[in-house]
Image (cartoon, rainbow, N blue to C red; front, side, top):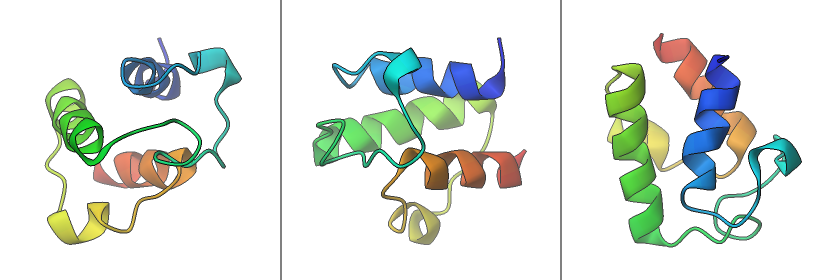
Length: 76
């Protein structure tokens, strides 16, 4: 499974949007319905799944799937 698909599968656990319907422009809160708690749980799951450590200052700037994927790619 590609990194992007694995990422989208994790997102889908917190959203009603199916992975195949997700686009990079989708916003976590507005389009995917994430709450603040959902987003923090999601970030923790990303760290565990991809064995990365997210910088608190960086994650506060993330609003879209594309931004999160880009950061994930930079950290790997």
